Image (tube, rainbow over all chains, first blue to last red; front, top):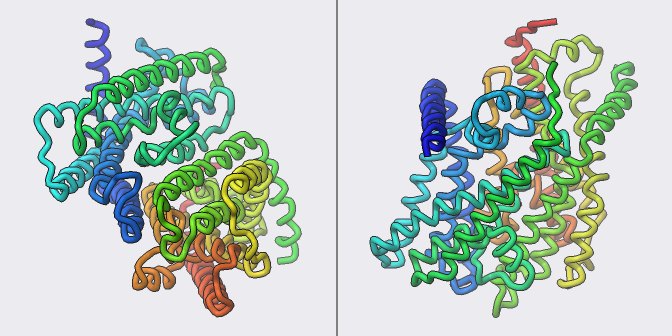
Length: 265
Length: 269
């Protein structure tokens, strides 16, 4: 337990440093808020265009779809704030040998790689996504119960594990492929699956993205908790698969780390 | 000028070798770019449940559009040219390039071309596989595939994307970090360029407005020209707009380069 408290303290120090740095570059902070907002508007515009032509997609009406898309955005932005900035730097650290400095520090390499950088800007967009969720719920005339709200927030946090697992696994390819910048494109491409209503999928696609890479559960399960009745089976399935995915990705990272050869002098 | 032109094949060759050294990166990029097609397929199949058409598209027509977009992207989209140019300016790496008797625009043009060639080699198998798999399950509307009108539009798209990239990257003379600007333009390209959905699914006034912007001529126009869904008149107007925007951005890039060089400080050896 004291070990986890030690890690938590380290993380809080990094968080404080990130806030100081973000406040030093305020224009950059607002620029990134606008960029992320533009991508969210793009997703909502897509929903708007589709529902101009149909009333329902796989049983999801316009506002239910907005809850799904905004929930996905909420999870993604929290992930982008706390874990993604560190992970995306791994290919560069491996190529330049900068990973040496992290390996010498008295903390687990995976923890240091994952938390070495933080960005506060995406949290503003997470807030906007939450407002969109609430506004869509209002349009659906749904007032979530207290237990549904807490379950939703808990599942949003669980969704972070899936994001984390996928990106950690992808950036770990850098131990085999020297230039692995494309993995970020891979992350964004694959995560488009999370915006699909699960009912729209079938066959091998549904099996793979439910059990192997549980992307179809990341936003679907929390959104369903808010707009439909809460079922325990998908929740348990989601928690089980997200934890397994994170553990497997961690194993893959350490497997790659064994191949690491310092590139510095 | 003749000496500069003679140097271009060498620049192209160096660029190609540099790009092919990271062929796995390109292969991964090509593979991942096929994922949105898969997602679009699943999503639109659900949208088309119980419907024959959405807008003017059948499901097969829409999937053909997304598949053709893969070709457009492979041929005309810059990889990380914007970040490379920005780094060259920011880190003073322009110094050796400025000493060469080679205009910077031509130098970058040759590197862009080599990057596209390397990507095409890496993307060929994944794109071919996508078409093959898709054609087994959906009847792709390839009968009206128009290579004669599509090729000039593809060339125009590459020129437009290159010139726009050049303009964006050259702002590095004034700004320390331009990544937010680049990603903001990406989002506009995706939405107003017809990357997320064909622009003719937009309500009529928005569709008309989108055709005045350069982004429509990066993805939607070449894809629609290749799919053969444009009338001859629409194609003529489109190709005119596309090249007009490309030339405008080339001139603007030239202006930015001249102004930027006056501000540039060469430091280091």
